Image (cartoon, rainbow, N blue to C red; front, side):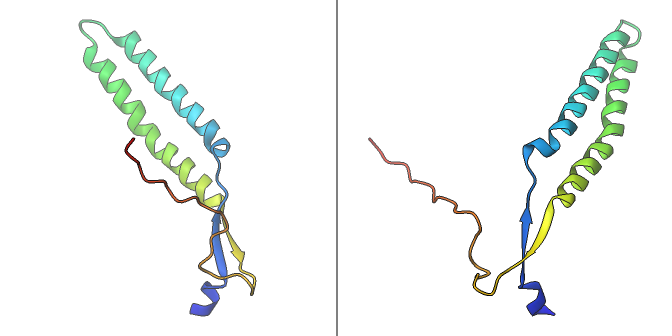
Length: 103
């Protein structure tokens, strides 16, 4: 069974465009909650304004996290490795960072 696991490579195909809509919806929720807080803000209802913002943010966070996690899980693929490929090689050539030099 351990040899079967080594025959696959996990690849994440998630891009920013996949979560862009979720970020836009989240920003709309935040701005609407701030607008409702501003509408409720007065000398006698300040606590209601803060409670409204807190309630909206706290209740929307689980939905946001669920959307992000399910989107991420939907973009994880397990691809079989060819016999010629090594499990140590990376499919993407990542350049090594350059060290800082004094001028």
